[in-house]
Length: 69
Image (cartoon, rainbow, N blue to C red):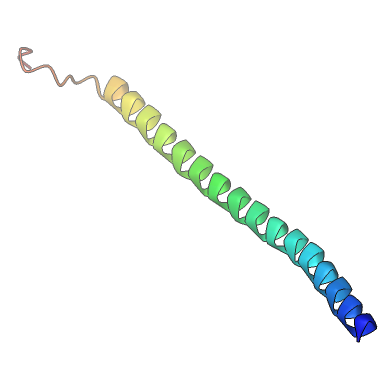
C-alpha cells in the first residue's frame, strides 16, 4: 500500500510541475496578446492625433474663437 501511495504522490508531483509549466505558458501568452493589443491601440491613437494635426496645418484653419476668417 505504501508503494501505491508513493506512486500516486509521485504522479501528483509530475502533474503539478507539468501543469504549472502549462499554466505559466498560457498566462505568458495571454499577457503578450494583451500588450500587443494595447500597443496597437496606442499606435493607432497616436497616428490619429498626428494625422489630425497635419490636417489642421494643411487646411490652414484655427480653432481659436478670436480669429475672424
